[in-house]
Length: 62
Image 1 (cartoon, one colour):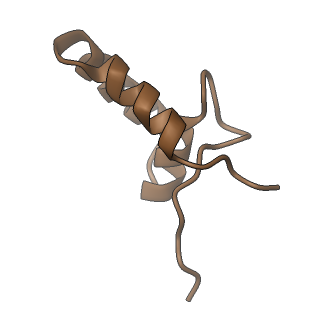
Image 2: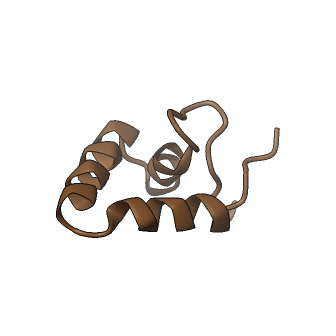
């Protein structure tokens, strides 16, 4: 069984690939993750959390 790892996506990215990577890791459409992230950014400190995630989550290797 292959272990899953969380990476920022190279193929499914708009800004930094955080939502694409989360979508691939969780097995759901990254568009849903993006919509939830926009709602989070509008109500709380989602932008800061996104920037921190973009720094912490490693880039996907080819």
